[in-house]
Image (cartoon, rainbow, N blue to C red):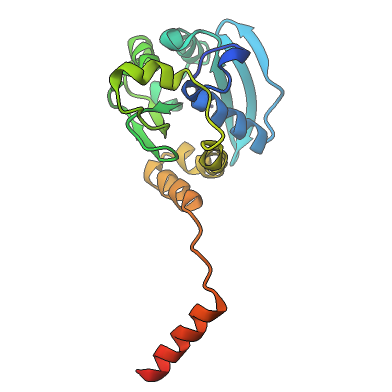
Length: 211
């Protein structure tokens, strides 16, 4: 069994925040693969749902602890199901990636992310991190307001396609291929090439005839 963790803050008032993009991605995976209806547990403390992806049993977790204490829920879940850290995939917001960019890595540092810092302290560093870019506000003093603010209407143009792409590509990551996962997401989220007008096509044809 593998554990998918979507980081965020609990409560409807935070549901649309940039800080909750990890939870949003897990929600899309739950929907895409027909997981069981979410249920709440007091220990491990979170909202859980189960399903199969390519024949592998997956448990999805959205912690009911606040972001800064995410490690308690993740650590309890790991011990409850007797998992190893590398069975755990944590999806989270990333300031240092441009919006819609996605990266995945096994192990590494927390880079100042309080949710990852908490998880590191409870289970160590040898788990998968899926970094979902939300962009940086440009000023360190504005970071808290940036991540605790809802996505704007303009953000929705890239947010929905990115969440859909993550759900589409997640089987690759669960098989341990982070590079294939990120490549697939990048392919699915690249803007469509502009269609050539009939005039452009005619001009190209004329240039070929002249050569």
